[in-house]
Image (cartoon, rainbow, N blue to C red; front, side, top):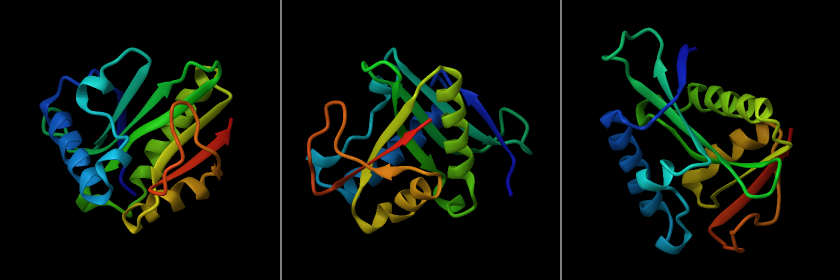
Length: 161
């Protein structure tokens, strides 16, 4: 298993911007535009969003390889957070990196005193590995939360911490 170095990131590294642009392209290729809820770089930089980047711990900076990302959005409802921007490097999927990032975000949510985290992901086949990841980690399906509306292309999950 690859050892990750995960950091709370300020989004200044251009490699992250390129990684997240690829993420947005994939989201728009897999879902109708009105069903894409991925955040662009400007929205990821907003207060209340904690962004994490995961790098191959065997590489020395600045050559380290960006392997995964994820974010925790603090919702207006006290004690509730949303997982956003989960992405794994395309050539490294299926190696447990997303699970490591998810556990890191859950630990950060607990450390901040959150009582629940929720997320939205797609219903299409492209998102099947993501849905399986969340189910393996104890998430359960839920109704739309925050500002989300019912959408046949969206699946919603939540986890009590």
